[in-house]
Image 1: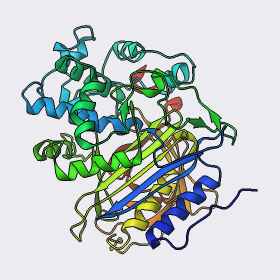
Image 2: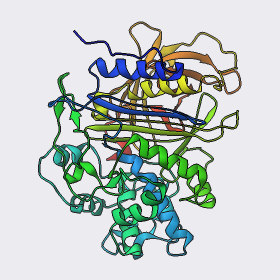
Image 3: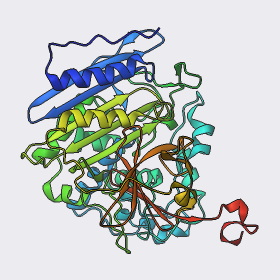
Image 4: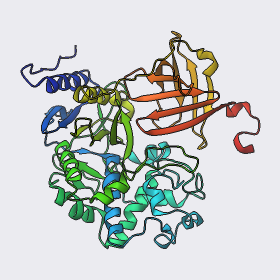
Length: 468
């Protein structure tokens, strides 16, 4: 029988509710350990949960370090922006001058397009790469990632024409920073960003050894925690090699607010979301996503690497003039904590519910679910199957669209009277909005947007997609 978490009822109401939310989640066995920091206008709730080492039953503390994974990208972007401000790097210059060894597509890719994920470079960090390298005990340098990137013969699309999240671009960005700074990315970022921000408990890893004080990472293959091998490949490079604490990320949040480390002009560039040529909004900035939660502007990024999951969200212009930050780090594989974002959404509601803007538009309450079911595909060959739930009250999406590996159950929210779209919300509380109009589906995951169109399944087409 699972033990109920011990909750201190004498604490601040916000702290009590947040403590209960995370405490119950960890006590249910869904992740070994976690670190939470919530802050708003001087109020700070910081607490550790569970174990940093579940096998040794070592309690996690607020000093426990976690791999932040893709949260690293905002530091790589900030480093690049600093070099650009000094006239040492042009954001619109082609990357061919830095990588003569790459295939011909290097002539069309710019630094900017890599930073906002519009380069079209395929992502090296896919399922095949993870299965081949990340769970092996042997350490490795960055040769495997560069080898994979160099093997790509063509881009997914012409740079700037679409949006495709790609770790590959940030591996190359880190290499460019090293070439210009003439020292390792880890050293440059530590000296230029971590140290000025006071992030003394953070490190950009250059080895496959788990740092002292870091949580052991776990996967949960059969409902039980299983420690995962820790190696250079699972750490990543400039796309994901930051090992940090929640407290240090809060220091980064404060440094950004004060503009003491990254200037206002640099931040304006980082927080300007990419708009595609056809007017589509992507929510992708430089190392951040810019979206909306409860009517509030949210600047955020998740982190997911084998055995660690994280999310860091900033709210810098609240209606009352204040600001807030929420940081949640845990030592379990993202594929085994598929309701992580739902927990995070619950925490955001607890901290910000007094300034949340509830949906005001009246909606009808009926939808012919069968009419929107079927096979959908994006311009990037991502595919989803939309089906009606057995209960007939919602839909189930399954497929290979990024972020939907395990499928999503969504409940009907009504028809938007302005756009005519049929709108659905993720049933687990995650801030995912799915809308349909005609043969089009739009998925909005707090600013990260995917567009899909309904069509036949590829196996129904004898020639296959594209005639091949």
